[in-house]
Length: 309
Image (cartoon, rainbow, N blue to C red):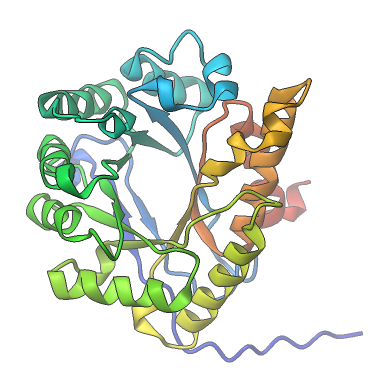
């Protein structure tokens, strides 16, 4: 039986460039042009999602299962970044500045030094997750933006209640912004409009619809991501941005904390959540467990290039 597929899409996802090579004014060995899809994932000539591996600068706030898997690297972020680049062969690195989450944080000089050290340790494009505190956002994002000038970083995250500081750093130093909203299509659209009004070009915004773990609310994320993608392909320019999905809650759920073979369970849960996000339209998938990367890449390859399996 012949299956007819005529979705009637009228638009495509806007492209965003991440990273800058020497020819583009930066020092990265590769840059990525994400977005540009004009159909649903796995249909037509859509691009495979990129896989980012997340590291941090203060492991005390990191999941136990990751700390035990990266024990020799976790206190040395530059060495950790180099390992992710050369051994794990991730597409991108996401640096989470967890040190800024400590009470009364004021070590702003260390933020810039950490970003500089990571950029020196790897030539992959870099995503930076900065402060989650509006009172220190301005200084933290200023230091991050300045340290990575000309490298086309991705700075995150902007939220409706605190987006001006990250937007200002992105505009001043030529970076892109992650716009996170709490699993709601209308709020995602509203935040994109606010960023545009603040001066951030549409082609420097990536949507983070917020990701719950599989079995812990991910179904709401999946539905929201699908509706964002549908609206974009039907011509809603305010939602036509690529999406990033970071299932950060996955490695803290009780099924993993209490599992006898918790590394195996952690990898399975993180990969399953990430694959579902890819099918919902995520352009960048962020994982934290080193065992997840190979399995996730194989799953993505099998979905986007089924003839090779």
